[in-house]
Image (cartoon, rainbow, N blue to C red; front, side, top):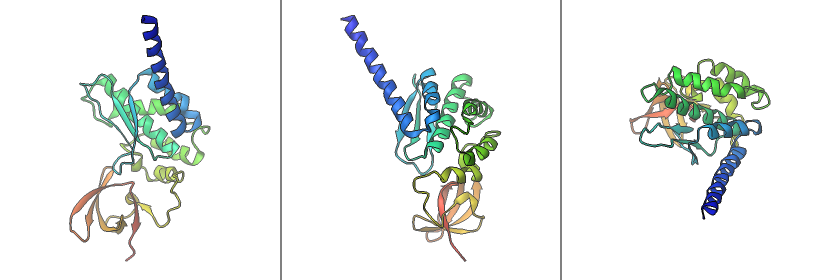
Length: 221
C-alpha cells in the first residue's frame, strides 16, 4: 500500500514539473527555458499565467501567513517581456525570503537579486541585440518597471503580436500638457508619478492615474 501511495505522489510531482516546463517552453525564449525552470525548482512557488491586466505585467506579494508564495504574469506578453517580468518577480521572492518583509519592494536588496538573476541571461543567444543593448543599460540601476525606460520598452514592443498599430506612442513619451486619446476617451497629461501618469479626462474633469507604458494616440492641436 505504501509503495502504491508513494508512486502516486511521485507521478503527481512529475506531472506538475512537466506542466511548469511546458508553460515555460510556450512563453519564454528557447534558451531561457531550463534556467527559469531551475529557478522555480530551486525554491518552488505557485505560478499562474493570468489574463491581461492594464496596470501591471506581473505580480508578487509576500505573505508571511502562506508557506508557498505566489507569482503571476500576464499571458499576452511577448517572450522577452515575459522573461524579464518573470525574473523581476522571482527577484522579489528571493529578496523578501532572504531579508524579510521590511525591505522596500524595489530597494537595493531587490535590485541586487534582479541583477544577479538576470545576468546569466544577458546573452545574444537569448535576447535580440536590439533588446540586449538597452537591457544591459537598464539593469545597471533597474527601476520598478521596464516602463520606466522608454528605449527598452520601445524595443520590447517591437516583438508584440499586435505591433502593427500605427500612430500610437507610449504615454511616458509625450510631453506634459499634451492631449491624447485612449480607448475613445480624451485626456491631458498632467504629472508623472513613478511608473504612472496623472491625467485629466477632458469631458468629465476627473483625474486618473494611467500606466506610463500605456499606448496612446497623441491629439494634434
